[in-house]
Image (cartoon, rainbow over all chains, first blue to last red; front, side):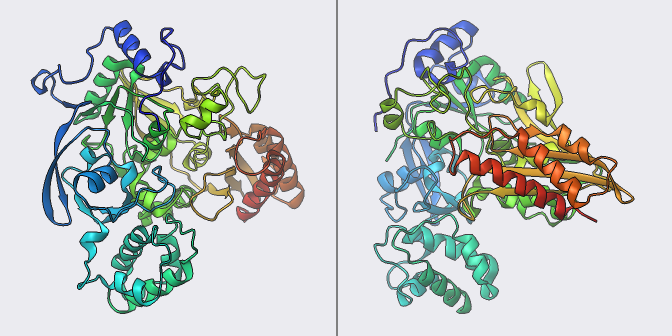
Length: 209
Length: 324
């Protein structure tokens, strides 16, 4: 996808000024006589923080470990996990919150990592599928996925595992079929592994996952 | 991956600071709450804000007060609302609408304010940049023609919020904080006729919360039509509030959504019911009158004609559910 599509020159503030990108943005600021945001405005100048558009330092807590990285504010949590931290379990598929392949936990709740800014995850607990379990010490949900053959091509699997593990963590051994279906409503599998995912979820819950 | 466009990121600590930043930046700033609507749209270059004003550090927007007047902060997550047993008991229609929004993952992320301010949607708009460039863009974003209605001077993108029709039926009011202070308006007045300027909220105003009056003996319900049982936006929706006095309807508020840029309050359909018993004939007349107000166009999933037909059925079912 193009980085920044060329945009027509601004014609002042119209109802479409918002959509006309940097040109209109600059024009709007000039017209309003406002201070432009960015590096030139130091933190001392205002009581609130301004960061970017250049790279900024971010301290993330991922799978229990402190990780510091330097990313632009526009970098998503998914990009930071995969490209900066080499945690490639969460998958970029639709990249627009429609498929669930990038599902991770933020403070113990499922989110789409493609629609969270890395800078917004600062101070929160990030858990990826790698943090859930590793070969040799699999999480009960991961083990149940293997035992119940709950994957085919595997692209949706890390996301589904995170959603199922969240449901198991919430509901415990009493996890119902309906609760699994609800928890996985945001995870699409085009291979159609859903029936096996359901079996794996109930098995993991029954084993006290 | 689709990269986001570049922007400066600001993290104010209270609503007043948000408003001061918005006033300074003008329309080139956008407010970031849950990010589930804005960030995917920015990836597809629907919006290119120079500054994102994050609400993640803002205190005081997550209030949920259920005594007397119900007051819900704009920053409260949809999941937090869904988990409130007292909200379910007090305002079951609103609670039900919240549970119908998208998926659990997106409800973990999204906020009430985000759902109220949800960008309008259209098959010609919710596409990636290259797709839209190939059709020379559309009126809502960078183009000159509404491809849904090419002779139209306004945009017909659809209000697809689940909470908004219920909040209108419940007679809710929204709190907007601006540089000159707060203004409170009936939530229907928050919405304009045009799918581009779909909110009457000014760019320097922040939606801080919603208040809902005591419902007394009135009862409400919400019905949503979509292709899949989860995940999808509504393609037709109705919310109804009824108050009975004895066996007669004293007041009826029937609201339609997902049939145009603005939610529709069907006053005439409501008036048809007032003073009458809610028998089959009255229900049919009101459903007929309400569906006449729906003018869906072919810019969402499902055919427009079908959406109009099914909306009449849904209004009828909503009224039947509120009998007795």
